[in-house]
Each structure stands twice: as structure tokens, then as C-alpha cells.
Length: 208
Image 1 (cartoon, helix red, strand yellow):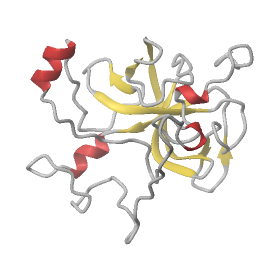
Image 2 (tube, one colour):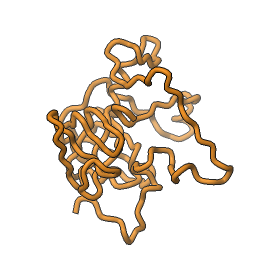
Image 3 (cartoon, helix red, strand yellow):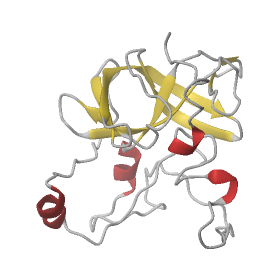
């Protein structure tokens, strides 16, 4: 997750098939960076809710534990992106296009630790704000598209991070019927996925 925290999947179904089978229309990924102050919606299929708020600037460098992301999207405090909303699209309310992916927020006010991202200034100083949430840019994908609509990480102007030379993907096999390592559910450890929910009585409310 160097530079960003997003994933792109290629489906075997067509848009027409998806529309017919599920009654939904696929959204388009915006080809440009969103605007500061833009109204956005963050729909969560897990919680079956939509958060409505605005973009409150951008963070040149956002750090959480061992990960560092660039040009992260900061939300205003109306974005109630609790645990379980990671991976939700950030949709521009004016264009109905996807401008980002919701990915993290500061739970406890700690600085640069797991579930407590911090903003890193150009001089290296850090700031953390309890309850502050963030997302990652998706227009980066469009900067790497070829004329045949495929991703080329070597394309001039491509903003996506290229793998290190010789880096091989490490796979972990789990016994049938058992959870994946550390109880991960489809995302990185420490993400805002269902596995990271605190017990109901012990969870800290966001923004208040």
C-alpha cells in the first residue's frame, strides 16, 4: 500500500448484465482530482447507510503505522465513516462520479499508529486529529490508462505506484473453514472492515 490504498478489479460480467441482474447502474471513475469543498456521498453496503459531507482539503502525506499515502482526501466532520465503511466509494454529489475510496480515520487521537493516521507536513512534523477521517484518490487509475483501456504502470504521467523490481506477491494458505491470518476480512489489518469493530459497549463514538 505504498502511496495509496485502493484496488482495481476486472469483472467477467458486462455493465448490462450487472444492471439486469442487480438493478444497479455502474458509476464512472472521475478522470480528474476532486475539488476542495465539493459535496460528497459515501455509501456503505455493510451498514446500509450513506454519509453526506464535504471535502475539507487534501493531505500531501498521510501516515498510519507502516503505511504512507499521498494526496489523501480529508473530510469535514459531517462524514460519519465508522468502522465497516472502508472501501466505500466517495461519490461527487454534483457529477455522481467516483472521486475516491474511503479508507481510514483517527480513533483515539494517537499519532501515526494503527487506526490513528497522522498528517505529515513538508518539514516532517506531524499532526493528528481524533475523529478525522480520510479517503484516497481514484483519478490516478485514469492517468495509467492506454488507448485500449488497460492499465500501464509505465505510461508517462501514471500516478500509481509501480512494484519494486523482483518483488513477488506472498500468499498465505489457511486451513479450510478457518479465518485468514489475524482475522483479516478482505482488507489490510487495521482497516475499517467488519473485523475491526469494537464490542458494542466498548466502542468509542465518532465525532462526539
